[in-house]
Image 1 (cartoon, rainbow, N blue to C red):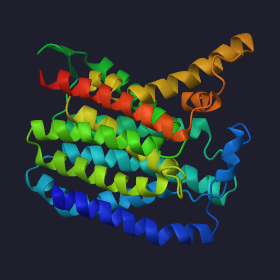
Image 2 (cartoon, rainbow, N blue to C red; image 1 turned 45 degrees about the horizontal axis):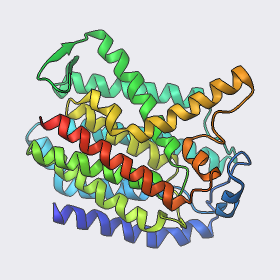
Image 3 (cartoon, helix red, strand yellow; image 1 turned 60 degrees about the horizontal axis):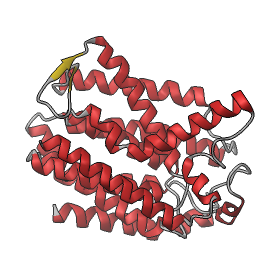
Image 4 (cartoon, rainbow, N blue to C red; image 1 turned 45 degrees about the vertical axis):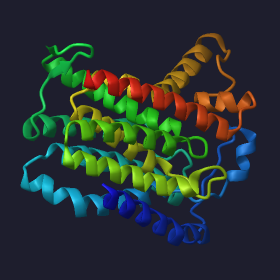
Length: 321
């Protein structure tokens, strides 16, 4: 664990030290939309694609410590989770590429992204069921009971995966927020992995924590690099995948509470405005609402992080009882 954490953290730090100046030099910087908070304009030009480097760090560390063990023991579940995360990250990379090189600030269309994301979620569930011992039973917290949902399980699971992964993307709106929440979730999954004595999951989660912690060194306010859709969709896919890996699907709504609130705030804002031409929040996602109310970015990250830690602690308690 110590070796995996140190390696992933150091690789992450080294990559950012090397490539942030390169990204600045070639001007692969963030374009700030006019609809965002006016004071975010000072962030324009901050390098993006930061998620690519912690993904590389995780892959290197996992390749050294985890993959060979998982293959030898035929424990393909953790490989499937990582595969889904990489697929979502690749969709994010395409989106970032379109924004940066094709000069289309909104990237892929919503339809294009959703089609690709639904295909990835469906592929993961098929692989999980076919090769990783997954089933259509769902565990009920507070009990040792399960419910067999049959085909309905896969239909609902695809929707939940895609929705929550996109909510993780919405959380990446202020310095340090998405990364901090991901590290806290990663710690919770690490404790579950240790509880289950699952070596492969332990090494994957500790690699995640180390790599994203390295990213946060450069992403906490004032950020010197952003993760981009590449990083936020990867984190969403990886953390949601771990929930399915541990057969704790219903806990996803507790673990990913902040992500869900971010997503719901956007849905409510859009729906309410279309119906009434009025807004519920000063700006959505909800972290921008608190910015408009005068909260500093550090305060938002701290409060949202504390809420995530409490919800993750509660989810862990439900898992082990």
